[in-house]
Amino acid sequence: MVEGFGGRVQYKVEDFGASPLAERFGIERYPAVFVDDALVARPEDFGGWGGPNTGKYAPWTSLESRKKFQRDLKHMLDIRLAGGTLASESAPNAAAAQKPLPLPTVQLTSLGGKTLTLQSLAGKPVLVEFWATWCPPCLSTLTWLKQVDPKTVTVVAVAVESKQDEVERLVKTMQLPGTVVMGTPEILDAFGGLPAIPTLFLADGKGTIVRAFYGAPPDLHQQIQKELAKLH
Image 1 (cartoon, rainbow, N blue to C red):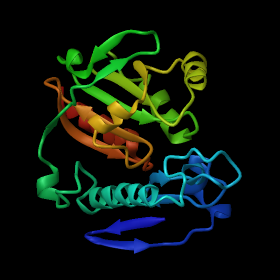
Image 2: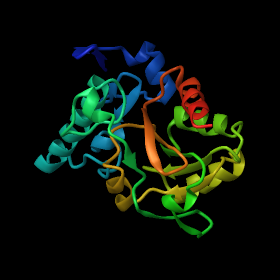
Image 3: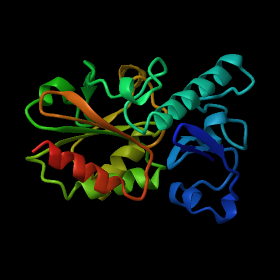
Image 4: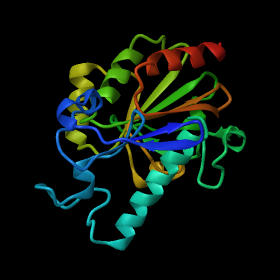
């Protein structure tokens, strides 16, 4: 696990057998990489550890796969060292990282087959959550969002690293809120990649991203509620 402290990075080894953080994410095996409360990579991402060799960093023997992991980890570390707000590899300091960015112009298709763009949702705040069926903190946040008045915020839930039939089953049984879409490489690229699970972007009524949330700290829901209150 990697923890950031005021411009410094502290590396800490934690026993997953007694790790509350690993338990929250359902992680039971190595290797797994966390930056604070954000899950950057899990065992399945590397492939070859008793499962299919299809993870996002597989095959691990490939130089390009290792470079991709390095880019994702660097991205997440830059974000944390910038204060946990929006950041990019070219803007690792907090002042530059807070530059407002618009929601990307990418086409989405809901599970029901409806085509839309994030810009078409303008008029009230939009909260985009990147989540996975295997991620308990992601599902916890989506469940919590059912309490939020849909008249005050539009929720778009983008499922990643998940099979569509499993997504459809969870949407039906848990009655997940908002518009649910399957994540595609085009969607991920439009948001600059996905450095961690979960990741959420909050935009104002004009479609400008005002806050990004990476990972699942204990006060995540309170943070979201606080930011939403500023937009009303």
